[in-house]
Length: 479
Image 1 (spheres, rainbow, N blue to C red):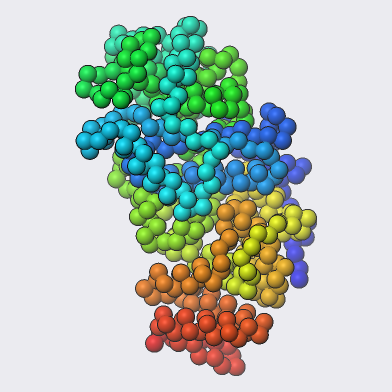
Image 2 (image 1 turned 90 degrees about the vertical axis):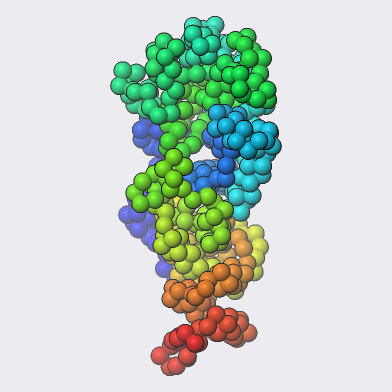
């Protein structure tokens, strides 16, 4: 067998700097070597879902991407504390609950349960902490009071408490624009009572028509917290007021994350987060997928057509910072590719296998992941292993294929079960899937596992595919 030489590894451009993890830091607009605040420990906060509806594929990407990040940090021997919040109080939630004639708690509990079902199906491990905003209102009020004491917050004419953006010297450093360049975008509430259009709400004064469960007593009157202050309070309560990594979707970079920095650094007087990570958009027909555009697909609707692991593979196949283009064709291609990997595991029993990081493929896999979590390059290592297994039937290499896949939350199921499930969900197998099963049958015959070879033939026949063996190889036709 012939593995990549050191020259090959350098040629790929994925070798990490001095064997160290590098992360693209949105704050610095470039890759930086990762140095945690506390040696051997990583504290990471990710903005989670606003739970008034079912999660869509954009949410799936956030969940899968930062699950992958947490998995890799742990595989790199870091002690990780991962927090992903839940926004369970805001305007959209109140409006939806009123439309449905139900309580806010009933609405949010239902969609939190649905979110967990979707995440579990996608192989997303639960965060260490999953705080709900409603449970941290007291902390939010404390933070707002501190900002008011420092002259960074004021009570507007409409009795909302607002943050005075121009009084925070560093505002705009995450988006890379000065205050004068920034405009009040679609996600910034432009209220005439503000001192400046860029000022944002920290505490919303209660409206008469809003339900009692959306109102809290405060020094500024009955009301509820603004969206941005929620994450500043929850992250500092659970991770401290200075931590390592803050993540979320690209759409949150401005204004949400910019405002978090202003709040947290304004209140505490020092750096808030060292590394800011943002995953790219999911796109449909070259447009960002969003509910406002009406071009979104819920996770559960996609899972009616595709195996959840195929969806996870589809997400990880693209680098987390690049756009992810959604289409049935791309998901079909992801299913075929994952089928090729599982085909190489046909003879391997299910079981936990430890990766061999000293091996050539292990070193290349690690180099890829250490280069800003380069999952496309890491997956390329898996396909090289699969090709080698299919050529020589090596159980040892098959075990390493499964081990490296497991680091990404892939290839942990029984291969036969996955391949059979693929047959069951297809009305008619496509050519790539049929060829993959024929390849698995060929491997079984080489290893003298004739019972397995017969089982594959029978499965294909049941799906309407007839195999014809000859000296030149195996061909197929539809019955």
